[in-house]
Amino acid sequence: MNYIAEQYQAVKSALPSDITLVAVSKTHSTDKIRQVYDLGQRIFAENKVQELVEKAPLLPKDIQWHLIGHLQTNKVKYIADFVDTIQSVDSEKLLSEINKHAGKHQRIIKVLLQVKIAEEDTKSGMEISETKELFLKWLQGSFPNVKIMGLMGMATFTDDEAQIEREFRFLKRLYDQLSLQHPLSVLSMGMSGDYPLAIACGANSVRIGSAIFGNRL
Ligand SMILES: *Cc1c(COP(=O)(O)O)cnc(C)c1O
Image 1 (cartoon, rainbow, N blue to C red):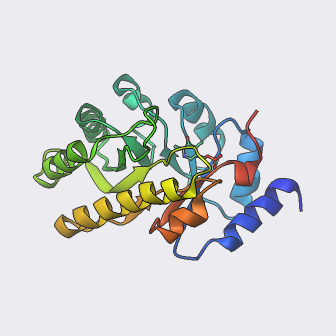
Image 2 (image 1 turned 60 degrees about the vertical axis):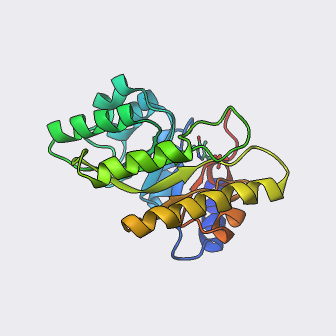
């Protein structure tokens, strides 16, 4: 087995079977993505629209593509006909735009609301209050062509495990709260460096790049 196959199998076998693995393929070639696809992986994620629209047509049609990076409203139209899930919804304006373009293609696009959980300022996502308000508007029927599946969050980039754990538990609490109003199914948190902790804190979907594909150049 080559490096990527070994890494993929190692990650896959360490994951409990009820945890969804989202393979983060940003910066990596379609050849490498194809190798992981051939091992059975079907969910891949990119963080840039341009890279996603370049790669997707070169790869099998049954890949479920997730977008995990900040999405500008004027770029929604480029991915609306094929993207499976947009994990990085961070404003009402964006949700509304996704809803509009999904409607044009007579689709329902799955989304996650991205919540700011990191204590550091640089990480994006909505504050709790904004998240709750947007969820309520969706529940009231404002955006019929999107389906909110759950929440996504990124912890602070730090060695302080206690801080990361606080941030993950914070998001899990919000997820449980919102689930009382409407059943949610996806809590996306955890990356290569922190996914075991994220799972311990209640994540059921993890976004793993470098632990599978190696370091990005
Ligand atoms: C790049 C990225 C990941 C994956 O990071 P790794 O550390 O390579 O596993 C996960 N989530 C988001 C939002 C990313 O941008």
